Length: 355
Image 1 (cartoon, helix red, strand yellow):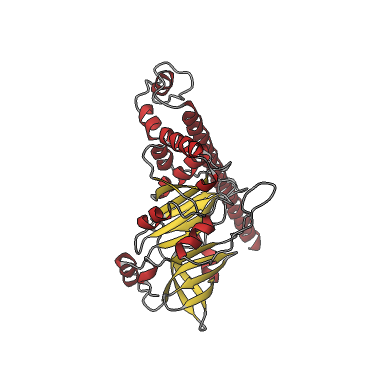
Image 2 (cartoon, rainbow, N blue to C red; image 1 turned 120 degrees about the vertical axis):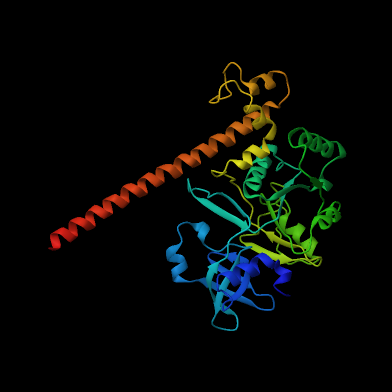
């Protein structure tokens, strides 16, 4: 394997040259597990940790390496190295960190396309799907929807899901997949391009790891057995990992996500709910809340049946989540400023008493 097989391109080469980094070993993070990293340099792989300086200067968790990152490192053994620098990211797929309001968690970086997998059973949820779409569009990542386990559904159930998807998301490519019969697998293989990076995201038990095993044509990732009580595959994946396929496509597996909080970016929601956002531009008042105002273009469209009520409700819910995130970030910023002033006054008083 070479660096080019991992997605190395002219942009990365130019950055290395312009920033005098040629003396370091270059690689791509292919696995992350509790702040330990496996980095591939093409022919060699290194077990890595980060430098103390990188840890000290990191302002947030987003400053740490993530699967998909290109990094420079200092090798000190045949298979050991220290990560020196994380190169600028082309794209960054992230969500609100679970249980940590106002903080972000990186899912993966330098992704071209995200395969959003939902199984056709009880996991199928369009509101949740629209959240995935929002974080993808926020990151400048192309989304593709994959509906798995169609071998467990009737033709009527499959058509019902297709109809719901069409009504809510007409412009997103959708692939119907069975990891058992392999129906739809050829469509996924056909969209995977050499040198491009793809990320598989979705809840636990929807078949992400099984899909990657099928794409790799071997059982590299562990998959869980079927639970008798829930009829679902038990969750196995606990880390993020990158693989290079036979056709040259690069794919990243991720753990299942129970929570999918959006962050403070606005582009994603505007793109996911494009029809609704375009209507807001025609409201009579610029500060319209779209709840009861006269001259509200959204309420008028809702009354005429031009937009779906469930879509509007989900749009409002995601908007509220974004506002809460922004408020939390602003409050933390104020607290940081206040603490900084306090610390400065304490140091000034100590210096005064010293003399």
